[in-house]
Amino acid sequence: MNIDELTPKEIVDELNKYIIGQEEAKKSVAIALRNRIRRMKLSEDMQRDVMPKNILMAGPTGVGKTEIARRLAQLSGAPFIKVEVTRYTEVGYVGKSVESIIRDLVEESINTVKSEMTVTVEKEAQKAVEERILDALVPESVRKQPAAGIMSFFQNPQQQVPPETHRVAMSKREEMRERLKNNEIEDFEIEIEVEDTTPSMPMIGGMSPEDLGIDIQDMFGGMIPKKMKKKHVKIKDARKLLLPIESEKLIDKDRMIQDAIDRAQYKGIVFLDEFDKIVGSNSRSGPDVSREGVQRDLLPIVEGTTVSTKYGPVKTDYILFIAAGAFHMSKPSDLIPEIQGRFPIRVELSALTQKDFERILIEPKNSLIYQYKALLATEGIDVNFTDDGLSEIARIAYEVNEKKDNIGARRLYTVMEKVIEEISYNAPKVESPVVIDKGYVISRVEEIAKDEDLSSYIL
Image (cartoon, rainbow, N blue to C red; front, side):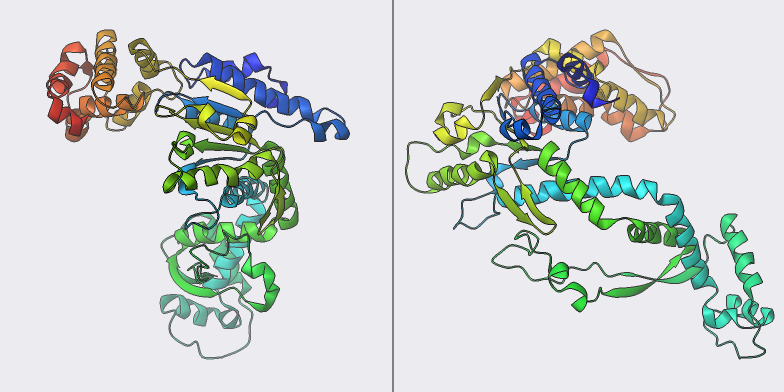
Protein backbone atom coordinates (compact mmCIF):
# COMPACT_ATOMS: atom_id res chain seq x y z
CA MET A 1 0.00 0.00 0.00
CA ASN A 2 1.38 3.40 -0.99
CA ILE A 3 0.29 5.95 1.60
CA ASP A 4 0.87 8.76 -0.92
CA GLU A 5 -2.02 7.45 -3.00
CA LEU A 6 -4.59 7.19 -0.19
CA THR A 7 -7.33 9.81 0.02
CA PRO A 8 -8.51 10.97 3.47
CA LYS A 9 -11.57 8.73 3.11
CA GLU A 10 -9.35 5.74 2.30
CA ILE A 11 -7.15 6.57 5.30
CA VAL A 12 -10.25 6.49 7.51
CA ASP A 13 -11.22 3.14 5.97
CA GLU A 14 -7.81 1.79 7.05
CA LEU A 15 -8.23 3.19 10.56
CA ASN A 16 -11.70 1.60 10.74
CA LYS A 17 -10.04 -1.81 10.63
CA TYR A 18 -8.70 -1.21 14.12
CA ILE A 19 -10.75 1.56 15.73
CA ILE A 20 -14.49 1.53 16.39
CA GLY A 21 -16.41 4.82 16.30
CA GLN A 22 -14.85 8.28 16.78
CA GLU A 23 -15.47 9.25 13.16
CA GLU A 24 -14.69 12.95 13.64
CA ALA A 25 -11.31 12.22 15.19
CA LYS A 26 -10.37 9.78 12.44
CA LYS A 27 -11.45 12.28 9.80
CA SER A 28 -9.29 15.02 11.36
CA VAL A 29 -6.12 12.93 11.53
CA ALA A 30 -6.72 11.61 8.00
CA ILE A 31 -6.88 15.16 6.63
CA ALA A 32 -3.75 16.10 8.63
CA LEU A 33 -1.87 13.15 7.14
CA ARG A 34 -3.07 13.90 3.61
CA ASN A 35 -2.03 17.54 3.98
CA ARG A 36 1.50 16.38 4.70
CA ILE A 37 1.52 14.48 1.43
CA ARG A 38 0.07 17.48 -0.40
CA ARG A 39 2.70 19.76 1.14
CA MET A 40 5.56 17.63 -0.21
CA LYS A 41 4.22 18.22 -3.73
CA LEU A 42 4.48 22.01 -3.41
CA SER A 43 7.43 24.15 -4.45
CA GLU A 44 10.17 24.53 -1.84
CA ASP A 45 9.15 28.13 -1.17
CA MET A 46 5.56 27.16 -0.44
CA GLN A 47 6.59 24.12 1.60
CA ARG A 48 8.28 26.43 4.09
CA ASP A 49 5.04 28.34 4.62
CA VAL A 50 2.69 25.36 5.04
CA MET A 51 2.90 24.25 8.67
CA PRO A 52 1.21 21.12 10.08
CA LYS A 53 -2.13 21.70 11.77
CA ASN A 54 -1.67 20.20 15.23
CA ILE A 55 -4.60 18.37 16.79
CA LEU A 56 -6.04 18.47 20.32
CA MET A 57 -8.21 15.51 21.28
CA ALA A 58 -10.48 15.72 24.31
CA GLY A 59 -12.32 12.69 25.59
CA PRO A 60 -12.53 10.06 28.33
CA THR A 61 -9.76 7.52 28.82
CA GLY A 62 -9.89 4.32 26.80
CA VAL A 63 -11.95 5.63 23.88
CA GLY A 64 -9.23 5.40 21.20
CA LYS A 65 -7.15 8.60 21.34
CA THR A 66 -3.77 6.88 21.54
CA GLU A 67 -4.77 4.11 19.15
CA ILE A 68 -5.82 6.60 16.48
CA ALA A 69 -2.43 8.35 16.64
CA ARG A 70 -0.45 5.09 16.75
CA ARG A 71 -2.29 3.55 13.79
CA LEU A 72 -1.91 6.78 11.83
CA ALA A 73 1.85 6.60 12.35
CA GLN A 74 1.99 2.94 11.34
CA LEU A 75 -0.05 3.66 8.25
CA SER A 76 2.25 6.47 7.14
CA GLY A 77 5.50 4.79 8.18
CA ALA A 78 6.25 7.86 10.30
CA PRO A 79 8.47 7.93 13.40
CA PHE A 80 6.08 8.00 16.37
CA ILE A 81 6.44 8.44 20.09
CA LYS A 82 3.91 8.75 22.87
CA VAL A 83 4.85 10.75 25.95
CA GLU A 84 3.03 11.65 29.15
CA VAL A 85 3.62 15.38 29.55
CA THR A 86 3.41 15.04 33.34
CA ARG A 87 6.92 13.51 33.19
CA TYR A 88 8.30 16.89 32.21
CA THR A 89 8.80 19.95 34.35
CA GLU A 90 9.68 23.49 33.46
CA VAL A 91 13.31 24.57 33.34
CA GLY A 92 14.65 25.02 36.88
CA TYR A 93 12.62 22.16 38.34
CA VAL A 94 13.84 18.59 38.72
CA GLY A 95 12.59 16.52 35.80
CA LYS A 96 13.13 15.73 32.15
CA SER A 97 13.63 18.55 29.69
CA VAL A 98 10.91 18.85 27.06
CA GLU A 99 13.64 18.81 24.40
CA SER A 100 14.20 15.13 25.25
CA ILE A 101 10.86 14.48 23.49
CA ILE A 102 12.47 15.35 20.17
CA ARG A 103 15.60 13.35 21.01
CA ASP A 104 13.41 10.32 21.73
CA LEU A 105 11.63 10.83 18.40
CA VAL A 106 14.97 10.91 16.58
CA GLU A 107 16.09 7.72 18.36
CA GLU A 108 12.88 6.02 17.22
CA SER A 109 13.55 7.19 13.67
CA ILE A 110 17.16 5.98 13.83
CA ASN A 111 16.02 2.54 15.00
CA THR A 112 13.45 2.29 12.19
CA VAL A 113 15.88 3.30 9.42
CA LYS A 114 18.57 1.06 10.89
CA SER A 115 16.18 -1.91 10.87
CA GLU A 116 15.27 -1.25 7.23
CA MET A 117 18.91 -0.96 6.18
CA THR A 118 19.82 -4.08 8.16
CA VAL A 119 17.45 -6.12 6.01
CA THR A 120 19.27 -5.00 2.85
CA VAL A 121 22.67 -6.20 4.14
CA GLU A 122 21.47 -9.33 5.93
CA LYS A 123 22.88 -11.89 3.47
CA GLU A 124 26.29 -10.23 3.40
CA ALA A 125 26.26 -9.95 7.20
CA GLN A 126 25.43 -13.66 7.56
CA LYS A 127 28.53 -14.48 5.50
CA ALA A 128 30.64 -12.29 7.79
CA VAL A 129 29.15 -14.00 10.86
CA GLU A 130 30.07 -17.38 9.38
CA GLU A 131 33.68 -16.23 8.91
CA ARG A 132 33.88 -15.00 12.51
CA ILE A 133 32.54 -18.29 13.82
CA LEU A 134 35.05 -20.16 11.64
CA ASP A 135 37.82 -17.93 13.00
CA ALA A 136 36.78 -18.98 16.50
CA LEU A 137 36.56 -22.64 15.52
CA VAL A 138 39.85 -22.70 13.60
CA PRO A 139 42.11 -19.95 15.05
CA GLU A 140 45.08 -18.70 13.01
CA SER A 141 47.54 -20.52 15.27
CA VAL A 142 45.69 -23.78 14.77
CA ARG A 143 45.23 -23.40 11.01
CA LYS A 144 48.98 -23.81 10.60
CA GLN A 145 49.05 -27.18 12.39
CA PRO A 146 48.75 -30.69 10.93
CA ALA A 147 45.28 -32.13 10.61
CA ALA A 148 45.90 -34.52 13.54
CA GLY A 149 46.81 -31.61 15.75
CA ILE A 150 43.68 -29.72 14.76
CA MET A 151 41.45 -32.67 15.60
CA SER A 152 43.16 -32.80 18.99
CA PHE A 153 42.38 -29.10 19.45
CA PHE A 154 38.64 -29.64 18.85
CA GLN A 155 38.59 -32.48 21.37
CA ASN A 156 40.32 -30.31 23.95
CA PRO A 157 40.34 -26.59 22.94
CA GLN A 158 42.32 -25.62 26.08
CA GLN A 159 45.43 -27.63 25.27
CA GLN A 160 48.39 -26.13 23.44
CA VAL A 161 48.96 -27.81 20.08
CA PRO A 162 52.71 -28.43 19.70
CA PRO A 163 54.21 -26.86 16.58
CA GLU A 164 55.05 -29.42 13.99
CA THR A 165 55.33 -29.09 10.24
CA HIS A 166 53.84 -25.82 8.98
CA ARG A 167 50.99 -26.93 6.80
CA VAL A 168 47.96 -24.65 6.41
CA ALA A 169 44.95 -26.79 7.19
CA MET A 170 42.38 -24.86 5.15
CA SER A 171 40.62 -28.11 4.37
CA LYS A 172 39.66 -28.31 8.03
CA ARG A 173 38.15 -24.80 7.83
CA GLU A 174 36.13 -25.83 4.77
CA GLU A 175 35.03 -28.97 6.54
CA MET A 176 33.82 -26.90 9.50
CA ARG A 177 32.11 -24.49 7.08
CA GLU A 178 30.12 -27.39 5.64
CA ARG A 179 29.18 -28.59 9.10
CA LEU A 180 28.06 -25.06 9.98
CA LYS A 181 25.83 -24.88 6.92
CA ASN A 182 24.28 -28.22 7.87
CA ASN A 183 23.69 -27.04 11.47
CA GLU A 184 25.66 -30.02 12.77
CA ILE A 185 27.62 -28.18 15.47
CA GLU A 186 25.09 -25.62 16.75
CA ASP A 187 25.66 -26.64 20.38
CA PHE A 188 29.47 -26.41 20.13
CA GLU A 189 30.77 -23.66 22.43
CA ILE A 190 33.10 -20.96 21.11
CA GLU A 191 34.65 -17.75 22.40
CA ILE A 192 33.64 -14.51 20.73
CA GLU A 193 34.38 -10.85 21.41
CA VAL A 194 31.49 -8.42 21.72
CA GLU A 195 31.08 -4.82 22.82
CA ASP A 196 30.49 -4.26 26.52
CA THR A 197 27.29 -2.23 26.65
CA THR A 198 27.35 -1.68 30.42
CA PRO A 199 26.57 2.03 30.94
CA SER A 200 29.60 3.84 32.29
CA MET A 201 28.77 7.51 31.71
CA PRO A 202 27.76 9.53 34.79
CA MET A 203 24.51 11.41 35.15
CA ILE A 204 24.77 15.20 34.88
CA GLY A 205 22.28 17.05 37.06
CA GLY A 206 19.97 14.04 37.06
CA MET A 207 20.17 13.63 33.26
CA SER A 208 22.31 11.40 31.10
CA PRO A 209 24.57 12.87 28.37
CA GLU A 210 22.01 11.60 25.82
CA ASP A 211 19.27 13.69 27.49
CA LEU A 212 21.48 16.72 26.90
CA GLY A 213 22.05 15.85 23.26
CA ILE A 214 25.68 14.90 23.87
CA ASP A 215 27.36 11.93 22.23
CA ILE A 216 30.50 11.36 24.29
CA GLN A 217 31.90 8.90 21.72
CA ASP A 218 31.53 11.47 18.92
CA MET A 219 32.98 14.28 21.03
CA PHE A 220 36.23 12.43 21.62
CA GLY A 221 36.26 10.49 18.35
CA GLY A 222 38.57 7.50 18.57
CA MET A 223 40.17 8.69 21.83
CA ILE A 224 37.77 6.50 23.81
CA PRO A 225 38.01 2.97 22.43
CA LYS A 226 34.95 0.78 22.66
CA LYS A 227 35.07 -1.52 25.65
CA MET A 228 35.05 -5.16 24.54
CA LYS A 229 34.51 -8.39 26.44
CA LYS A 230 34.85 -12.06 25.62
CA LYS A 231 31.96 -14.48 25.93
CA HIS A 232 31.71 -18.24 25.71
CA VAL A 233 28.52 -19.10 23.87
CA LYS A 234 27.06 -21.86 21.75
CA ILE A 235 27.29 -21.38 18.00
CA LYS A 236 23.51 -20.99 17.67
CA ASP A 237 23.65 -18.11 20.17
CA ALA A 238 26.78 -16.64 18.56
CA ARG A 239 24.85 -16.23 15.32
CA LYS A 240 22.24 -14.06 17.08
CA LEU A 241 24.87 -11.97 18.88
CA LEU A 242 27.12 -11.42 15.89
CA LEU A 243 24.52 -10.73 13.17
CA PRO A 244 23.59 -7.21 14.36
CA ILE A 245 27.27 -6.42 14.93
CA GLU A 246 28.28 -7.45 11.41
CA SER A 247 25.20 -5.80 9.90
CA GLU A 248 26.10 -2.49 11.54
CA LYS A 249 29.55 -2.61 9.96
CA LEU A 250 27.96 -2.81 6.51
CA ILE A 251 25.46 0.01 7.01
CA ASP A 252 26.24 3.47 5.68
CA LYS A 253 25.91 5.32 9.00
CA ASP A 254 26.00 8.83 7.51
CA ARG A 255 23.12 8.01 5.17
CA MET A 256 21.24 6.26 7.97
CA ILE A 257 21.49 9.30 10.25
CA GLN A 258 20.50 11.75 7.51
CA ASP A 259 17.51 9.65 6.44
CA ALA A 260 16.40 9.28 10.06
CA ILE A 261 16.69 13.00 10.79
CA ASP A 262 14.73 13.83 7.62
CA ARG A 263 11.96 11.43 8.61
CA ALA A 264 11.79 12.82 12.15
CA GLN A 265 11.71 16.41 10.89
CA TYR A 266 9.20 16.02 8.07
CA LYS A 267 7.15 12.95 9.00
CA GLY A 268 7.48 12.65 12.78
CA ILE A 269 4.36 12.37 14.97
CA VAL A 270 4.48 13.19 18.69
CA PHE A 271 1.51 12.13 20.84
CA LEU A 272 1.32 14.27 23.99
CA ASP A 273 -0.84 12.38 26.47
CA GLU A 274 -2.35 13.66 29.74
CA PHE A 275 -2.33 17.17 28.29
CA ASP A 276 -5.14 18.22 30.60
CA LYS A 277 -2.90 17.59 33.61
CA ILE A 278 -0.62 20.52 32.80
CA VAL A 279 -3.54 22.93 33.03
CA GLY A 280 -3.19 25.01 36.18
CA SER A 281 -6.09 25.93 38.45
CA ASN A 282 -6.77 29.43 39.71
CA SER A 283 -4.02 29.00 42.27
CA ARG A 284 -0.83 30.83 41.38
CA SER A 285 1.51 28.90 43.68
CA GLY A 286 2.86 25.40 44.11
CA PRO A 287 2.62 22.88 41.31
CA ASP A 288 0.26 24.98 39.20
CA VAL A 289 3.08 27.39 38.39
CA SER A 290 5.11 24.44 37.17
CA ARG A 291 2.21 23.16 35.07
CA GLU A 292 1.94 26.44 33.22
CA GLY A 293 5.72 26.41 32.98
CA VAL A 294 5.59 23.08 31.14
CA GLN A 295 3.18 24.64 28.64
CA ARG A 296 5.55 27.54 28.08
CA ASP A 297 8.52 25.19 27.67
CA LEU A 298 6.55 23.13 25.16
CA LEU A 299 5.60 26.21 23.18
CA PRO A 300 8.85 26.68 21.18
CA ILE A 301 8.98 22.94 20.42
CA VAL A 302 5.45 23.02 19.02
CA GLU A 303 5.88 26.40 17.29
CA GLY A 304 9.10 25.34 15.60
CA THR A 305 12.64 25.43 16.90
CA THR A 306 15.93 23.57 16.52
CA VAL A 307 16.86 20.92 19.09
CA SER A 308 20.40 19.63 19.56
CA THR A 309 20.67 15.85 19.47
CA LYS A 310 23.70 13.57 19.44
CA TYR A 311 23.03 13.03 15.72
CA GLY A 312 22.95 16.74 14.91
CA PRO A 313 20.41 19.59 14.98
CA VAL A 314 16.76 18.71 14.35
CA LYS A 315 14.05 21.20 13.36
CA THR A 316 10.59 20.75 14.86
CA ASP A 317 8.70 23.05 12.45
CA TYR A 318 7.01 20.25 10.50
CA ILE A 319 6.54 17.62 13.20
CA LEU A 320 2.86 16.82 13.78
CA PHE A 321 1.85 17.14 17.45
CA ILE A 322 -1.31 15.42 18.66
CA ALA A 323 -2.25 16.36 22.23
CA ALA A 324 -4.86 14.42 24.18
CA GLY A 325 -6.51 14.47 27.56
CA ALA A 326 -9.73 13.63 29.36
CA PHE A 327 -10.34 17.29 30.37
CA HIS A 328 -12.72 16.22 33.15
CA MET A 329 -11.59 18.90 35.60
CA SER A 330 -10.60 21.48 33.02
CA LYS A 331 -11.22 22.43 29.42
CA PRO A 332 -8.94 23.20 26.45
CA SER A 333 -9.66 26.91 26.82
CA ASP A 334 -7.90 26.79 30.23
CA LEU A 335 -4.59 26.24 28.45
CA ILE A 336 -2.43 29.32 27.93
CA PRO A 337 -3.54 31.18 24.77
CA GLU A 338 -0.23 30.61 22.99
CA ILE A 339 -0.54 26.84 23.31
CA GLN A 340 -4.19 26.92 22.27
CA GLY A 341 -3.18 28.71 19.10
CA ARG A 342 -0.72 25.96 18.19
CA PHE A 343 -3.47 23.29 18.28
CA PRO A 344 -6.03 24.72 15.86
CA ILE A 345 -7.86 21.43 15.24
CA ARG A 346 -10.06 20.42 18.18
CA VAL A 347 -11.76 17.05 18.30
CA GLU A 348 -14.04 15.76 21.05
CA LEU A 349 -14.21 11.99 21.41
CA SER A 350 -17.36 10.49 22.86
CA ALA A 351 -17.67 7.88 25.60
CA LEU A 352 -18.17 4.33 24.36
CA THR A 353 -21.61 2.74 24.45
CA GLN A 354 -22.50 -0.87 25.17
CA LYS A 355 -22.99 -1.40 21.44
CA ASP A 356 -19.49 0.01 20.82
CA PHE A 357 -18.12 -2.57 23.25
CA GLU A 358 -19.79 -5.38 21.32
CA ARG A 359 -18.26 -4.12 18.08
CA ILE A 360 -14.81 -3.71 19.68
CA LEU A 361 -14.90 -7.35 20.75
CA ILE A 362 -15.33 -8.70 17.23
CA GLU A 363 -14.81 -6.16 14.43
CA PRO A 364 -11.18 -4.92 14.58
CA LYS A 365 -8.51 -7.01 12.83
CA ASN A 366 -6.79 -7.46 16.20
CA SER A 367 -10.02 -7.98 18.16
CA LEU A 368 -9.94 -9.44 21.68
CA ILE A 369 -11.95 -12.47 20.60
CA TYR A 370 -9.48 -13.21 17.81
CA GLN A 371 -6.56 -12.85 20.24
CA TYR A 372 -7.99 -15.18 22.89
CA LYS A 373 -9.07 -17.80 20.37
CA ALA A 374 -5.57 -17.79 18.84
CA LEU A 375 -3.84 -18.04 22.24
CA LEU A 376 -5.91 -21.01 23.40
CA ALA A 377 -5.65 -22.68 20.00
CA THR A 378 -1.93 -23.12 20.74
CA GLU A 379 -3.05 -25.49 23.50
CA GLY A 380 -5.38 -27.35 21.15
CA ILE A 381 -8.49 -25.72 22.63
CA ASP A 382 -11.20 -24.46 20.30
CA VAL A 383 -13.11 -21.60 21.95
CA ASN A 384 -16.38 -20.37 20.45
CA PHE A 385 -18.24 -17.25 21.61
CA THR A 386 -21.98 -17.05 21.05
CA ASP A 387 -23.69 -13.76 20.20
CA ASP A 388 -25.45 -13.60 23.57
CA GLY A 389 -22.14 -14.38 25.30
CA LEU A 390 -20.45 -11.44 23.59
CA SER A 391 -23.40 -9.17 24.41
CA GLU A 392 -23.17 -10.18 28.06
CA ILE A 393 -19.42 -9.42 28.22
CA ALA A 394 -20.09 -5.99 26.67
CA ARG A 395 -22.98 -5.32 29.07
CA ILE A 396 -20.97 -6.16 32.18
CA ALA A 397 -17.96 -4.10 31.03
CA TYR A 398 -20.21 -1.14 30.27
CA GLU A 399 -22.06 -1.33 33.61
CA VAL A 400 -18.87 -1.67 35.66
CA ASN A 401 -17.55 1.44 33.89
CA GLU A 402 -20.73 3.28 34.81
CA LYS A 403 -20.50 2.27 38.49
CA LYS A 404 -16.74 2.57 38.91
CA ASP A 405 -14.09 4.64 37.14
CA ASN A 406 -14.79 4.76 33.42
CA ILE A 407 -11.66 3.33 31.80
CA GLY A 408 -13.30 2.84 28.41
CA ALA A 409 -12.47 -0.18 26.26
CA ARG A 410 -9.73 -1.24 28.68
CA ARG A 411 -12.51 -2.59 30.91
CA LEU A 412 -13.12 -5.30 28.31
CA TYR A 413 -9.67 -6.72 29.07
CA THR A 414 -10.43 -7.14 32.77
CA VAL A 415 -13.81 -8.78 32.11
CA MET A 416 -12.44 -11.05 29.37
CA GLU A 417 -9.57 -12.19 31.59
CA LYS A 418 -12.07 -13.26 34.26
CA VAL A 419 -14.25 -15.06 31.69
CA ILE A 420 -11.29 -17.00 30.23
CA GLU A 421 -9.41 -17.51 33.52
CA GLU A 422 -10.45 -21.10 34.32
CA ILE A 423 -10.03 -22.31 30.74
CA SER A 424 -6.58 -20.75 30.53
CA TYR A 425 -5.56 -22.12 33.94
CA ASN A 426 -6.61 -25.71 33.21
CA ALA A 427 -5.27 -25.80 29.65
CA PRO A 428 -4.48 -28.01 27.87
CA LYS A 429 -6.59 -30.42 29.94
CA VAL A 430 -9.85 -28.84 28.85
CA GLU A 431 -12.52 -30.60 26.84
CA SER A 432 -12.70 -28.93 23.43
CA PRO A 433 -14.60 -27.18 21.93
CA VAL A 434 -15.54 -24.71 24.67
CA VAL A 435 -18.69 -22.67 24.14
CA ILE A 436 -18.84 -19.32 25.94
CA ASP A 437 -22.46 -18.20 26.03
CA LYS A 438 -24.43 -15.85 28.23
CA GLY A 439 -24.84 -18.43 30.97
CA TYR A 440 -21.09 -19.14 31.08
CA VAL A 441 -20.24 -15.42 31.28
CA ILE A 442 -22.75 -14.86 34.09
CA SER A 443 -21.35 -17.82 36.05
CA ARG A 444 -17.83 -16.39 35.85
CA VAL A 445 -18.40 -12.65 36.25
CA GLU A 446 -21.90 -11.65 37.32
CA GLU A 447 -21.47 -12.21 41.06
CA ILE A 448 -18.19 -10.29 41.08
CA ALA A 449 -19.78 -7.42 39.14
CA LYS A 450 -22.64 -7.23 41.67
CA ASP A 451 -20.30 -7.14 44.67
CA GLU A 452 -19.24 -3.49 44.86
CA ASP A 453 -16.18 -4.13 47.03
CA LEU A 454 -15.01 -7.21 45.12
CA SER A 455 -15.43 -5.65 41.71
CA SER A 456 -13.19 -2.76 42.78
CA TYR A 457 -10.31 -5.20 43.10
CA ILE A 458 -11.04 -7.70 40.35
CA LEU A 459 -12.76 -5.70 37.62
